Image (cartoon, rainbow, N blue to C red; front, side, top):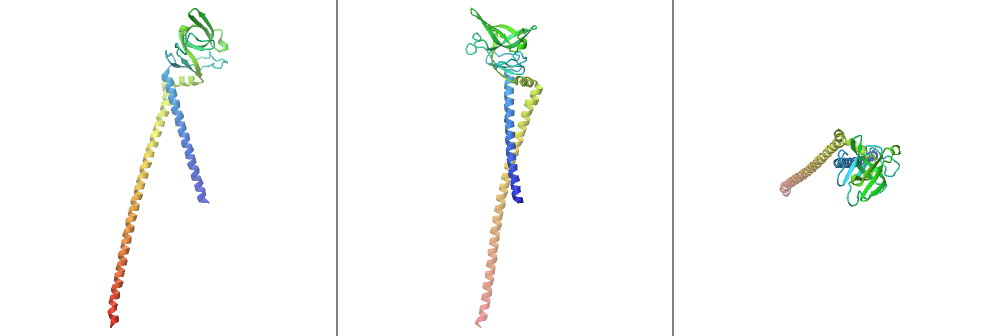
Length: 254
């Protein structure tokens, strides 16, 4: 009964070890993915204070002016996906009511980027002018802007909830070091230790196998020697018996 109980405990330990290895592997993958995504976002737009003239800009939301009840409303702490205008898919002259645009706006003498929803479109000959407003019903009266099409700097196509706050946090060098670089460094060291441990175990196993082979060879040699000595001893005993027999035969003839 005692032997069976020990075997059961051994199997349970092996199962726990496998589960732990899976958890560690998943945690490593998640950490690496988070680090890569965060690094890419920060590299694409490190401060959120500029908009790319081509391609995509990722912009953290700094106010709640668009915190409304629309499906694509967003609030402070989110991260916006903003596409630069072009003459094809994101043509700034062919936008409609409901689209969300990014433009430059002056507040208290300071130019800032604003991202609001188009609520009206006016066409004056070849010119297109948009009226933009935030979704937040508490600030509608003071949050309306008139934006010519040629002043549209980006078209917002989506947002990532809460990611902007995280990115703003990680943009601080100290927090980026503590949250991203330090865990990656520890992860790298951990895997180096595992790799070295694995190499050492393989070498020890190889040395053990060679030692076992040498021991087997020595045992085989000793067995051959023992068999040879036993054979020699038997031959000596047979020789003695023959000599004794021959010595007794003349006496018998007399």
